Amino acid sequence: LKALLIAGGLGTRLRPLTFTRPKHLLPIANRPHIDHVIDLFHRHGVAEVVLLTSYLADAFADVISRAEARGISVEVTHEAEPLGTAGAIKNAESLVGGDAFFAVNADVLTTADLTALLAFHRARSAHATILLTPVEDPSAYGVVPTDDDGRVQRFIEKPEPGTAPTNLINAGVYVLEPSVLEAIPAGEVVSIEREVFPDLAAAGHLYAHPTDGYWMDIGTPEKYVQANVDALAGRFPTEAVTEPGPDAVVAASQAVIDEGAQVSSACIGSGCSIDNGAVVQESVLLDDVVVASGARVVRSALGQGVRVGPGAEVRNRAVGDGEHIEA
Ligand code: GDD
Ligand code: MG
Image (cartoon, rainbow, N blue to C red; front, top):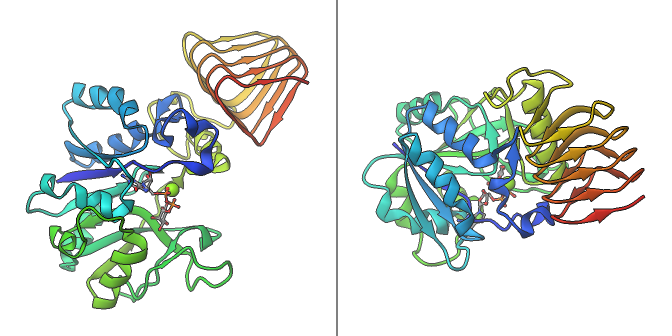
């Protein structure tokens, strides 16, 4: 089977970090997020992926080389203007072939059992099957009530807070039959969540299956930082964290952390320097970040080349590349 990685969004909620890179390249445990997505599919036997790109598409070149170096074939489509989630999939129609395929929002981090999802889909002869995950506040997601057999009754994208009929939401991982593409007009902006899924649900052809695995959408600064904290703590297991735990630190070999710095639950990129008396907690530092003496960085994501001056504090923030923060 092939997997289509839907990766062309602007990442507006992660600005300013996404002014200079697609969110899919932001690191989780010092590895680009999308590499973890490719790992998941690879573990479930998928050796062919299609990257559906638009925004900053050239930035994926290294992702492609790394995947190909481990025997995964990568094809790429490009939308000059973003076509929406269904428009992007339609745009890849010629690469899909006659079999069912996976499609995934390439900003989710999950350990979901894709093999079980595919088996569920086939057992019901579904036209499309959606992976579900429980969340506390479903209003930021696609809400998916089903009957006892998993048939989707309705698909409600981002309902008003307090109105969702269930807390099981669209986890952004799908098995789709090629027939689903027939109903999508080519070259137009189409949303799978707002147009395709509601129609399929009304026709009774849409199914959904919950996972109890780890799941996070990294699309906001809070959730992006939390995904890193979860990887460090071992809640999202990855080989990128050799000794997971509540205080685990993953630091690139080219980073310099002073013995007198307090660093815990943090991912530290190459070329960073953290000085004596600095505190870095539950945070992500991209490459070449300087945290000066006595500075504090808490629950934040700092872009490449950020400098946090002596005694300055950064808390609950996403800081763009190259910014200097003084006390
Ligand atoms: N190629 C392409 N073209 N990709 C796109 C486009 C586009 O026009 N628009 C969005 N994407 C990609 C994004 O890069 C992301 O990987 C994915 O599609 C989903 O877009 P988001 O903008 O992250 O959507 P969301 O998080 O608000 O909501 C979606 O994901 C939730 C789960 O995380 C929906 O699918 C919800 O129903 C779902 O619950
Ligand atoms: Mg998202």
